[in-house]
Length: 256
Ligand code: PGA
Image 1 (cartoon, rainbow, N blue to C red):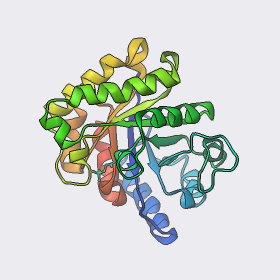
Image 2 (tube, rainbow, N blue to C red):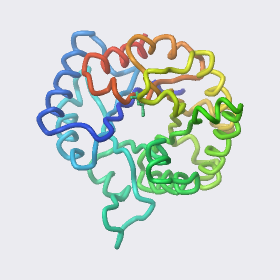
Image 3 (cartoon, rainbow, N blue to C red):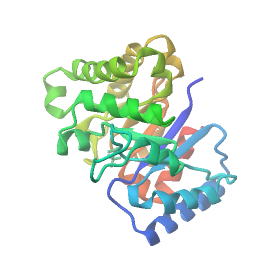
């Protein structure tokens, strides 16, 4: 069965003090809501330098209603060696990460990551037994020229051909329209469902085992209607994951 999953992407935000407060407040909010994470899993993908600290914070709460898993925001395609500044999937696993985001649109745009590179990063993650959260999504220009589905198909095809169809059930896919990220604009439930349904149809025999997340300005106010869409299993949350109350409300909306 598909797992409901809410992932916070902290991006380049945080400090040791702010991280401690945020995780502590999130756990208290979840306790107040009286939710257990048996039906919805949550995770935070934090800057590399804070993996150790946040790992310890989330480990200390592993039995609480606010139990949360650890993830990173990017990974090298290489295993080890002379790659200055890179972090390997094996290192992330060594830090107790469970998830890693690959192909976020900010990496694709600012670091020119290609579909091929994203597929190789997904493979590196799988080889280290991490779950890659593979991001796909169209720009506003692509949506307006009616190429949304073609763009997403191309992004997915690269990943599929590199990791192999038999490994598809080991990934999570996050569909994030680039025009909705950090802009306050959200895809309507109808727009989001159309694309998520299309993605599921691309994912082969195990499609029904794969969690598909929507991302792009998800907030407590729009989460429920998105989660009612039959092919949306959760969310990748940027800005709202930096606020404990908002993030816990989104997790809670997924567990109804
Ligand atoms: P946002 O970011 O929720 O701030 O729009 C989502 C993301 O980039 O993953």
